[in-house]
Image 1 (cartoon, rainbow, N blue to C red):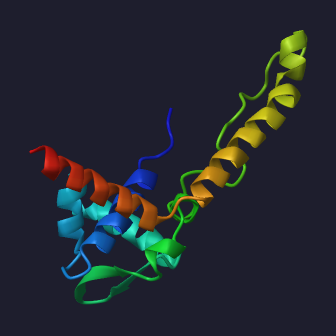
Image 2: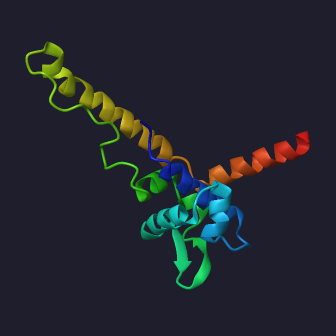
Image 3: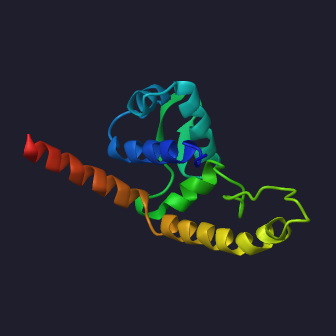
Length: 148
């Protein structure tokens, strides 16, 4: 199992909207870049809009960032697209056998470790902005052009 791809698609959408400031970032345009269906893009855009990360106008194609890319963190995106419920990134199997010493204790033993791991991941995501992702993409593009 892995975290839903809605997270990385959400980051992709925001980065492309930022890079395409002068163009129209329609769901069709974004879907071509993600290589997926515009319906999926519209669903994720709805989540991003609800979270206050993008602005869309009814009847008008395209989306704009609702805030500066330096003020949108990957944690904002992670939370916006409902990747997981709060403090539930990891799930522990239910109903282990109570007559087994591991079964009796595994949930209480592993839960604090998993909680700390989720908090650490969220801290990292909270320290990276869309602006940094866009700058990294731009740097990689320049490097590719120079190597060609």
